[in-house]
Length: 243
Image (cartoon, rainbow, N blue to C red; front, side, top):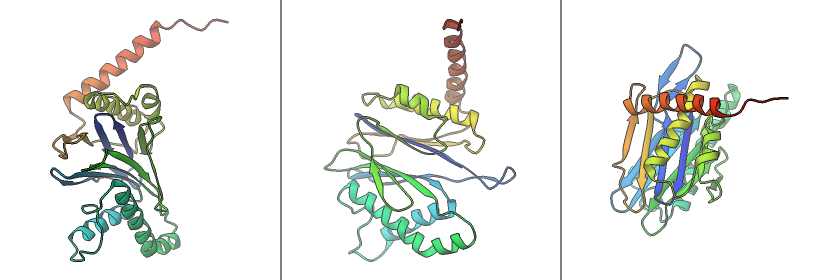
């Protein structure tokens, strides 16, 4: 399965995605689910995917082919003028793949189930964050809830609900996202490391703050152990229930 998180903050955007895919307990593989397109000084676009791996890879490949195509009249993620237009392009790519493969998948009892988180900034507008569904339609994040999740989101959602603020520093938000992943990793074996993460600072139009976090990463280990200890301390400090 998958777990991906995107945050839209005053200072920029944070993206994180696990890399585990599995078709049973004895067939586990690692695949990249965070895809980035960059034109330095002009645009940064990030796309995270969840669902049928063959379908999500087909969508990403189709988007890449459109970029390298000789058809100058076709709008692509690298030429679209707004992030809203990019979201529509990805929705169209999802529908195109469904038109090609949807019937065959249904005939073999496979589901055409995919969701994407799209975010980024194009010069001339603010950073934006969207969730795109299997039908190709999409929603945009709001100020009331400045984060989006796809995949196995239920274990990591409580801490995001309690702590997320739009005025957070990106490093602070990255800590929060990794704690959300730590909770998910402990409770769901279908989500696994490494974690791909991108911290995008508003108006920089660069992806230099991109990293892959492995199981033996010193910071992640310190964070995980420290969080467990703090939870135990907080639990012990709360008065016991009495009837």
